[in-house]
Image 1 (cartoon, one colour):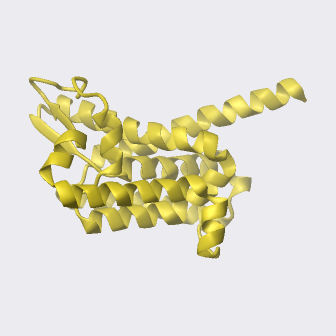
Image 2 (cartoon, rainbow, N blue to C red):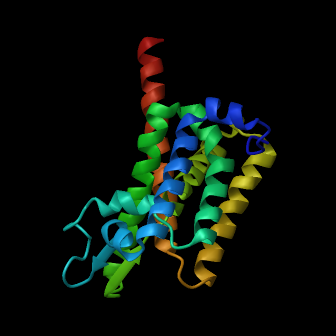
Length: 209
């Protein structure tokens, strides 16, 4: 089972520096939001308006800043727990120079899909924040591996990927206030991005082999 963490704190920081840095940034941003409240949220939360700014392009930085913001401690804790447990194997596979852009693009992808779906539903004013879109991107990458590169995952790890995705989607549908489309968008982004990266890697290996 690749998702069980046995490392000491020091080894975790050494082996997975990008994941550790992302967790640290989320903690710092959360402390900032506790201190400055609505002022901090006002500059960082992802916002769309069906009439005035349907895709949130007037302030495009919010696609990224919102990925590091959380509504409360429970929101932060659940996301960071998922990140700490599930992200290290992906960082190990991709190495941090590819893993960091992958993570950020999944967060952006989740926000984009969320904005598009809210626009299609003509739902008016829409707010989104949290790392879950990016984290679902990690799940999406492992879904690709579980389906297309089965030899890379043991049975228990594959089952864990399926269960976490099914549970996450069902939970997002049943609990109010959760951005279902942000989660789905993040997962799809992760699946497609990892698929593209895997294809590029294989072509390079074929060219040099």
